[in-house]
Length: 237
Image 1 (cartoon, rainbow, N blue to C red):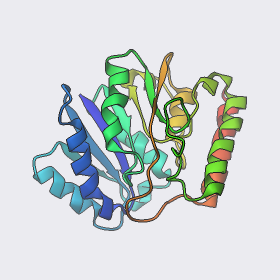
Image 2 (tube, rainbow, N blue to C red; image 1 turned 180 degrees about the vertical axis):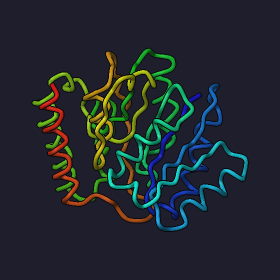
Image 3 (cartoon, rainbow, N blue to C red; image 1 turned 90 degrees about the vertical axis):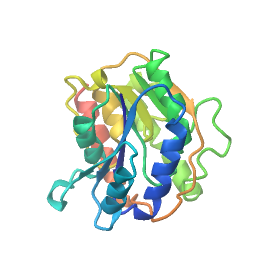
Image 4 (cartoon, rainbow, N blue to C red; image 1 turned 30 degrees about the vertical axis):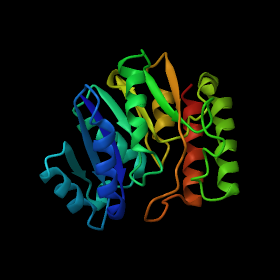
């Protein structure tokens, strides 16, 4: 079983397309799967998820009440890890900037090719020249690239991963065994790589797409959360 964990916050306008594209992408695969939506929304996103489940697709909802959302997107993913049924866990965003069509290759790297973690990368060989065009503007693309350096300096082992700050990845569940994740903000992959048990990482090239609908949740405060996260990982070395 493969569990695709998708954190959502007010993504109602993207939900139907997300479910349809994920189901189409995974229709040919030989393994069973579920789509687990971990929801922090105040709109009708939960209703859309329940409707998708009633249609017969393997979709489940984990709705977090307002008092349980302080740890943000990364915390939602971590809660999804605990609730997921699969021995392989995949993570992607709901805004379709992470194309569901990449999921089969991402999961196959873990199931068939011996990777402990597979990372959909905007920066590895084979990625499109415009792979980061979905980031809103040249400044965000520059910041995205520059933020890798403090990670590589504090955790040299992660230099083999060109895109350690993405949110589109898959892993074996046992990577998380005994890992004391401290999720905050957006960077759950950084927690997995910084604290999990892994030997082999494979990067899968993809193009970061423009957001389909809704608005980005990224803001200046998330940059401060990221710097604190890097500091905690450095102290835990």
